Amino acid sequence: MAMRFSFFPRRAALPALLTLCLSLPCAISDALGAPQDASPAARSAQNSGKARKAAAQSGKNKGGKEKKKAADTPNASNAPTSVQEAPPQSEENAAPAPQEPPQANPRSALAQISPSQVRLGEPFTLTIEVTDRTGTVYELARDFSLGPDADILETGRPVDKEGADGFTTRTFTVKAALFKLGETSLPDIRLTAAGPDGNAVLKIDGPKLVGAGVLKEGEEAGLGDILPPVKVGIPSYLVLWILLGILAAAGLFFAGLRAWKRWKKRAPRPAPAAPPAPLDQRALSALHALRQEDLPSQGREREMFFRLSEIERGYMGERYGFNALDLTTEEFLAALTRMHTPGLDFRRLEDRFREGDFARFAKAHIPASDCKQAIEDAIVLVQGTTAAAELEAKNRAIQALPSVPAVPSGTENGSSSESGDTSGKGDKP
Image (cartoon, rainbow, N blue to C red; front, side, top):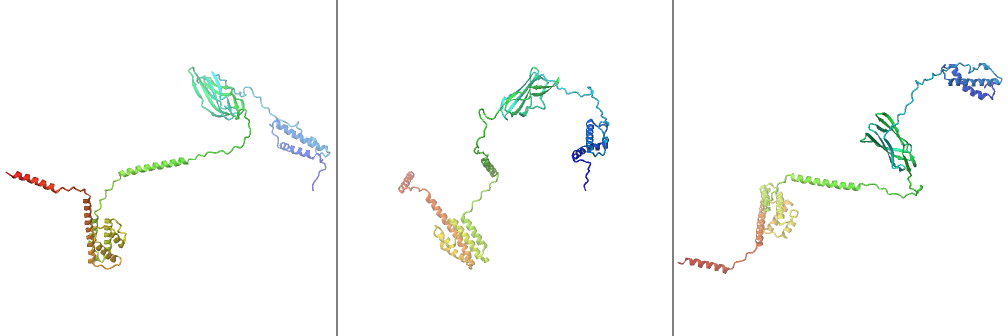
């Protein structure tokens, strides 16, 4: 059940609550004890808080329900105060004010701008020339600036030029860009000097500069129409790479060719091959070797006829100029009938090849005597065809010689008779 105090008026509730909240911190500080060396501002704040608290209590008394007397409220004027005033500082103890360095007095100082009129954002050059006695060094101040309307792009190194009269001219070059339209005065240029007389400061009046707009005279700014697409050239190095590849390939080719030629010169040349023996000698050597092996006595008649056929076919094909090794027996004999074969006994050759086919393909038994006779017949064939070919070659050579004119018979007899007569005459007494 909520309790309601009849002695607290409703109208005075809100101001009294606010006063109570404001005076609560002051009451806490009074309870803990205020420090004796409090400042006047803090003491006045405490006194004002106590006054507000007294006013709230007096408001309660006016409502007729006073519980405490106003005398219980402490007065701010009765509270003891102890404020210690700081002793005044003497003029001797006060810190001395910083003194400005003296003004430098050079022979000449000049600052000029080139060009004097620039477009917005375009760079211009500020040249500063100072001439003074040799030994006095001038530098741009650390806080050197051209103001908010210009930006410094580059500051060059100073250049000294000594004169014969004992004076030196130092030149500073500063590149900057202007970002203001119309005539603009740059701020004063401040330089520091260090010389035999000590440090000094030099101020040069800032030059004037005119900022021109981007538009030309009489041209008004406005929105233009949308421009058509512009072709943007993209560099292509394909042709260059192709040419480099061709040059590289050519270089490798010539380098390899040169190296091959050098190797070829250094490599030992093989000895020339001996000329092959004549055809008849090669064929006869193979037939003699086959006869010495005596294959029929070993029961190898079939192998003997294979080798004999290969020797005879090779000889005949090389002798008459056709591929006899790849032909069958019928094709081989038919080809020989269409050729000029001097010294060849065709009938005996045909009988020997027929007999060899029986031994090779039909595996017929051929007596040893017949096998040996077949080898002898092949030897006779080689010798006969070789002799006939040599004789025919000699006849062709004789026919190719130029003909000699024949001498008349009467002329020979007359000359002999004359000689006989002459000899007879000489024998006579």
